[in-house]
Image (cartoon, rainbow, N blue to C red; front, side):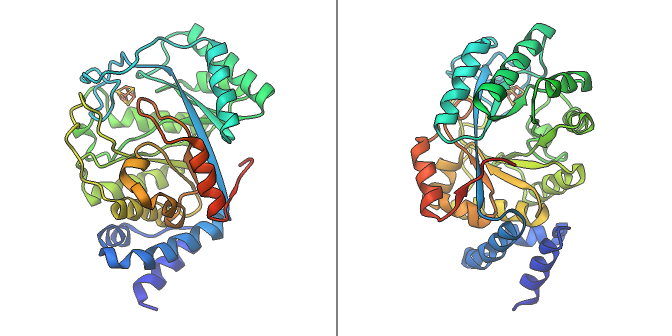
Length: 328
Ligand code: SF4
């Protein structure tokens, strides 16, 4: 076997993961090398994670009206996108969304709100009430994505039965000022550290296709490794009309597979969950995301864009001979 493939396989199988130079090489491989790459990334996924696939689902519990200016986001202060905007949903509405997600096969349900942070104690308690009810009555693992939380807020939600906290870094530290100017990268890093310190399972990743370089993609992957996040959600830009990135279309299906594989080989023991933008960017190659190293995907709709029908995802998992994982 070519020494390059042997080396990256061995480094990933050791659990340490490949270094920056090899990660850059993975992103730069010619299209003809994709099958070789998938052979390695799939072996690493099976070695650490087996054949169980996780399906997550979310509810956009508070939509739009965000003070931040993230370029890709239809809910941001500089977005003119036509989206539904609403304040925090009631406990009953959140619970009904979770019940529907369970019917779609999801085992993890995330309550997501727009904005830099949760504004009030009343809102936090409402989310806590929903978390507790979803856990007790539906048996779903719960996750929240509520912006930058204090450690006492995370501890409170954990006391109500919460399992995971989601907070994306979005991109590399170097590229972040091109994506968001209203808060600092370090605030997001701190939010991740806070969630970990409180004892939450931490889900943290980013979005690709914003104009970042291969180096930025590797930098993000290695930052996530340094932070020892538990799960890496991967989004591919699905440009929404009315956002500053509406004309940007630079990803290819094979390029997306290379990104997933690079994340698998740099973070070999972690969950990798492919989320927004997979339908439009991976197109007919969606099923190959698992060979590239994904251990899960998001079923149902995304925050402001529609996903494909959940039955198609369940069929894809079955047709591949994979199974749905019931718990972590
Ligand atoms: S990604 Fe989050 S913080 Fe950024 S604009 Fe959208 S809702 Fe606001």
